[in-house]
Image 1 (cartoon, rainbow, N blue to C red):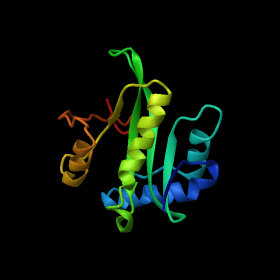
Image 2: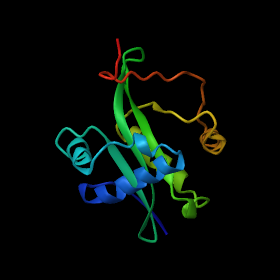
Image 3: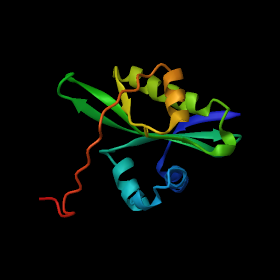
Image 4: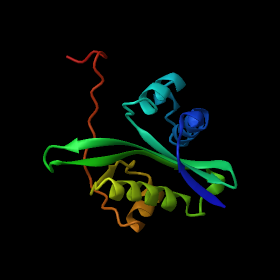
Length: 153
């Protein structure tokens, strides 16, 4: 049976394990730099900078969705930015991703936020198909990163 719930500080180990799972899935383990203490401070203090939902199947961690809140100066409103949506392979096909995305949608509606944004690797055809099935518009836009202190200018 599926249960979706908001992640708590007590879930940090599980959340980090799921994050490592998606990093491994995309062969990007070297980019997962956050520590449990950084996550504790950023996600569970008075000024939480991120949130997450955990999916459990029969009491076992099955997946997660993490998000932050941002402001669009052009739109003049706040939007949710989804960082990750991930479901362990053995739990795929059980509509867990749908339930996680619905939870994000419900939270936005509760907060009167009208837009959710996220990125997807352009070669991740399965994820793109999933998002389009949910009704999302997949746009083509470059993503720029500037890691200050790494020889920039």
